[in-house]
Image (cartoon, rainbow, N blue to C red; front, side, top):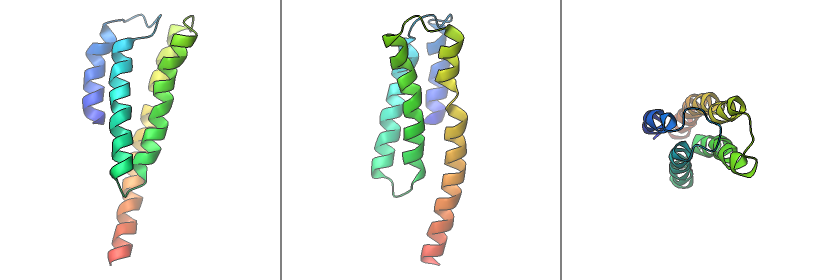
Length: 108
């Protein structure tokens, strides 16, 4: 999911390269990813999908903020849009490791 969203976001971001207004193509990609992460969090026994969905919600909200306050500085919009990607990946790595350790301790 994350890889597909990242790849699709590249051409989507090129549709409006100045980021002076809401980039609806990227918003659509992020909204689809949010739906996917939320669905994963609901179905999963692991905890990291909940954190990933929660952190990605900040990205989706950044798009909504540009709709409410359309005069946002483009660089701020780009930063708000992308800043949560690294924490999501960190949460995934640590969460998967901890969930596996918990699963091994539980069964072994």
